[in-house]
Image (cartoon, rainbow, N blue to C red):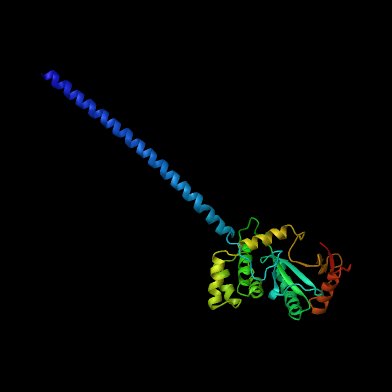
Length: 268
């Protein structure tokens, strides 16, 4: 009788051990499956969020077009389109380019006055090649300038960028400080900030930079008229060819428009 009871206890214990082992295997399987699911979920999160974060940093965003944009991804000064019989000046620039700032300081007031008088039209084409390996400051400045065109303040905003030119810009400077200095206030400021924050014109700025890279222009600033590059200075002769005055500038622009060979212009 005792022997039978011992057998029964051993059988019960064996069954209990088998059940316990089965339970452990089940738990291990559940743990493994759970771990796999967690990894899968994390992978999905990474796939969805990392590109968005990278794109935000690189300026990727919308593909809206500024109201005064051209087919060549430029922006027209005061929205004035090229006209027959009127010279058309195309300016290639990078907002962090020191030489661009100096050229703008010296000749900006002159060509803007000539444009206001109807003697020429002006188109800005922005590049951000200075960002190569150095962040995205020129790119964000280009996006901000294109955004300013949406509230009718491209020229004013570009002037503020050159006035405050620096190796780096904070978003707060680009979206608020510089905007207010350019005269963007009230509802226009709210509109500007919303468009800038969403990078609405990032695609346009990127296309403008790509167009610069294939334009044949090799440096900024470059002032181009009728496919000819204006030459402001003769390095060999150490001579200024285009003086910072209305007559000298308009004469050089007119000769380039006519395709006339002159020291003040050369083919691209």
